[in-house]
Length: 485
Ligand code: BG6
Image (cartoon, rainbow, N blue to C red; front, top):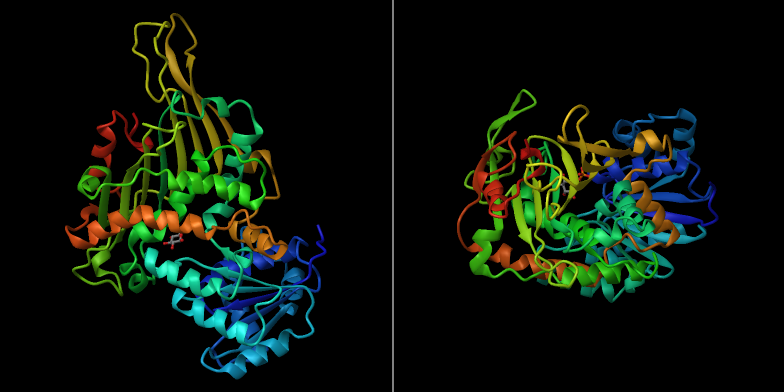
């Protein structure tokens, strides 16, 4: 599909890890699929003393390895490289921004500025762009983390907001670009089947898990000042929760969807600091074994303080104070160095009120919908069915929609979808400022309490986190999905 919108995509942090691993591979995939306007240009910007050829060599060495399962199509790769220019830019030098403006002078279409840099550079870059008039007819993309807490995120948003209107600002949360998250919207709002059941009368509890096998990799320094609550919960998990729980929007336009998500975030039951021990568990991994390989303790990772109190695991019980969800617990969980890499949403429906089919008691969890975001994107509906043979014996069975089997092609990585959305000016999958503020406000009492006292509970790498996370669910007569059977 050829598009008719021309663009210049300026990538700040053009030699950084994110550019190499995610952004340039996603742009390449879009190019290979013919989804980028032929005249669209990419200008990588960084401090390195490089010329265009030097930068392209860098891209050849560092980006190819991250291009998806389809591998590289050499013809498409070389025509992709033709789109790329390089501008060496020192943030402190006003003349370098003039150079950037000159490089963009004759390029038609929308200007996209993608800030794949640390948040401390967001405001200086925006101001420098404005000083040479590059904030007009432009979109700015801000990577997370956007601040460290409500105050710092407001400071960035205020300053960026003086230069760019809210409709020009694209705050990325890559979880919103994942195909199954889109499918959750299709499932909920494209079918009459699920929506009547999607409420407190029929749903007993909901679990949302993002579990990783990876540790902190080379990001120990950053992560030790961040922790799982800021890195994963404030953004990805609360965004998933808001999509699961939101009311049907009037349309899929950006503000209709974001208004509904915001309502959920504002309806989150505030956490009383005195209850934090009951509704929030934090953990930190110790040495352990994952898939047969020994992995070191978090506190010995490079860049991490040996007496670190940073959490690498969080489990929470969250409630939503509205008519649809009052009283239904949402259990959120994320962690590094866990037993498996899996991201999924589990909707547990209530048991039948009376079991007429035999002596066994009504079974909780007999009906559940599991939306697997990764790996192996699937939607699986569990039901009870009669076992073949004599008597009425029930057994759990499931109906599956495995996306890669049903739709053989056309799958898109999250970053590819989101970058195309930026180029085409579609804001629905980007986080609006008020959503971000509501999420920070909600997590802040936990951040403050954890900063003031106590330490994370230890868990061995390769397990599912501290036992306290299971105990929290046991109090509600339920367990995490992998603990069944
Ligand atoms: C990022 C976090 O936002 O998401 C990382 O900063 C985390 O710590 C990553 O590893 C997980 O994303 P995905 O798509 O690999 O599940």
